[in-house]
Image 1: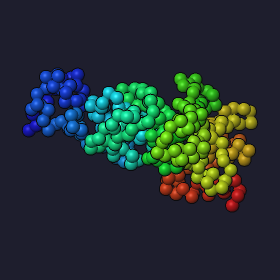
Image 2: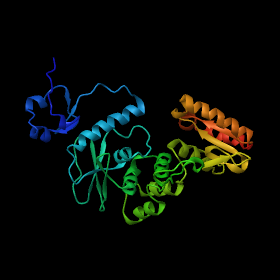
Image 3: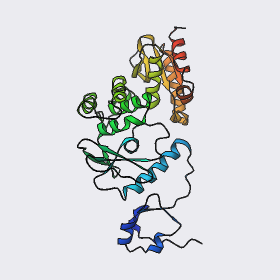
Image 4: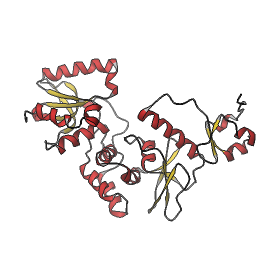
Length: 316
């Protein structure tokens, strides 16, 4: 039988061994099997194995390790790369979080321990707290993300940072109307400092746009363009003949009245499903045609995306 933990409430679910000792926790209690040891010098309350699998499970596991390492992270260190991107909500593919990425400013020595990949950043890095965790600003997060993403996903990350927030049809007042950063700032950080993936970052910046709302939308646009088709408009508001707002197409060819829609898991919700039926009906009533895509089309059957668009444009 596992002995009771009887830990002070102020320690929380993750805590350093030092803080536990300062709170009066004995060595015996710190060796309790109910406590996990994700990193030397830190303990976390052992949790029931996460029921989530796939990408969601990977992110949940990464968050647990991030919270744990934050308890012992040096005061001069900060998260970078895929770890910083996860913290601030940049869209990422799966498979990037086996290690946590931690940065320091030159000439400090990056942390070296199992499960941590250290990075030395050759510039003064303004550091901010997001969810109580130290991360650099958007430009440095982007630059340190470069070595770990392939082209389409690096463009998607860049799109996310450059996106100008906009409510569909202008019907909702937004709390944030500015992008996280600008094209000029990202270009400037590439010109002023040396980065491992500078050519890849420059290409992503060149291919980035300000209207993509999600990683699948970026992939869809790039698949269409790379197949030799004209570049579609992003985030396009569609109105009927009486100027009533119908909806916002993820991508569109307005002159051809063609909407291209990506339907993720959120479209499986009953209320959203019914709204989609009404919207597509109104598209048809207004003379618009449409292409509907899912993750299977975009990420597994990529050639299907331009094929369907080409057919709707009458180019086959």
